[in-house]
Amino acid sequence: MADADSLSVQEKHAPNSICFGCGPANKKGLKIRSMRTESGLELEFSPKLEHQAFPGMINGGIIGTLLDCHGNWTAAIALMDQSGDSHPPCTVTASYSIKLRRPTPIGKTLKVTANVSEMGDDRAKVEMVLWADGKVCATGEGLFVAVTDGHPAYHRWN
Image 1 (tube, helix red, strand yellow):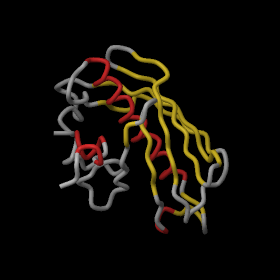
Image 2 (tube, rainbow, N blue to C red):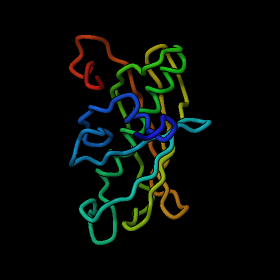
Image 3 (tube, rainbow, N blue to C red):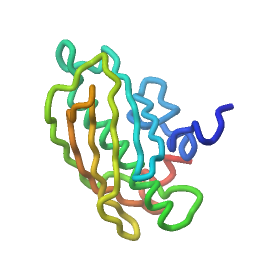
């Protein structure tokens, strides 16, 4: 078994999640692995050939999914830390936008960072950046909100 420091936040807090982008239990998903840093979360992702939009370049929807899921987890972990809880609240995307700055190449390990720019009691605004080969390929921002019992997503991380 992997030690706790080598587990992603998804593997630690939502091992049964089936989310296409970040669910460890989705066999056909992207299975992103967001890791804690001093300023937020970071991930590395190696795109596959089926993630292409056109030869040699990653599909914008895949890029959006990476930023959305990673931003959502950044918010959830920040809200958990703020409240002092040992498990993050279930958060959902209220809104997000991305800017595709340049084509994102296949065959390179992508790096995505995210940090919280604003916090509330049950929500966080997050800024995300995706790099390939040391160049910014996409940026994004999102608002992620903790949901309560009764929301269809509430139990998704259990």
